[in-house]
Image (tube, rainbow, N blue to C red; front, side):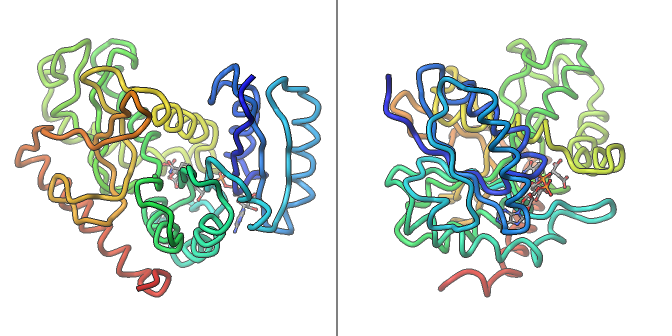
Amino acid sequence: MKEPITISITGAAGHIGYALLFRIASGSVFGADQPVNLRLIEIEPALPALHGVVMELDDCAFPLLREVVATADLDEGFAGANWALLVGSVPRKAGMERSDLLGINGRIFTGQGQAIAKNAAKNIRVLVVGNPCNTNALIAKNNAAGVPSDRFFAMTRLDENRAKSQLAFKAGVHASDVTNLCIWGNHSSTQYPDFTNAKINGKPATDVISDHDWLKGEFISTVQQRGAAIIKARGASSAASAANAAIDTVKSLIQPTADGDWFSVAVCSDGSYGIEKGLIASMPIRTKSDGSWEVVQGVPVDDFSREKIDASVAELIEERDAVKDLIPS
Ligand code: NAD
Ligand code: LMR
């Protein structure tokens, strides 16, 4: 049996937390031979609810689950963490953009970044789910002195999964037949789901789907607005699909990517594709056989794509400028 790894999860008593913890504890994320410790972090008022969740974890008698800690103390919560899943934050309501949450949520990520730097394991990796996730990840990264920037990620996998399903419905195939789907930029209504490089059963999506007006119009706006559509329908933001996407992201970052394919996650830009260095922007990523990741280079960017990517990156720059006071110089 392997040594246990430690996963810290903020907002563990929330909707996404509830859909996430049991899958991690069951072994379906890190593997059937990988024991896990869970460090569950909540704000004080949510600790009673979190204790109820811990009782349920106990009641599952998961063979791989070792220590479970429930706490509102960040030092305790991130102690020895190999992975930090930063979910805890307020979701938007109908009529809001995700960036409207910056003022409410941004501040959470300064203290969490600092606590990660102080307490986490040397190999810590941080996935930010709480919105606006790109800029929250930027805040966490810039407050985590000494933690390399390539350890910070923000989640755009839900958008990728949504885009794959939309293309699959249109083409009359299964979502798993769609590959090479990159979400570029921000997890917001400016994100660009890149159909120009997507493939369906190995063929260009633009050959399989002849309705290019749909690809350039309704497809993009459906993916961009899907979160809002779910809030309108459910009266609450997506939770099960978001937890599922967080799991997909972690698995994609720990397992080598299939040859020729890529996945979407927002990373700290190294300037690739003209995206300003240091921004947390979504782009095509692959995981190598040694477990490290890289930006896939050479993905064609035509004029249509360039304009869309630039618009989303411009929004990231605006968000960064809006939180200047939370980023140490
Ligand atoms: P929720 O309100 O059900 O749960 C959030 C939890 O976070 C609550 O239990 C709350 O007590 C806790 N929390 C708040 N501040 C905290 C702090 N400082 N430290 C620790 N915990 C804290 O919300 P949810 O549906 O679970 O969504 C959580 C976040 O995820 C929201 O910001 C939402 O917009 C975002 N989200 C992102 C994506 C994505 O694709 N990136 C998808 C869905 C939801
Ligand atoms: C989503 O994409 O479903 C989440 O980011 C929640 C939201 O506010 O849209």
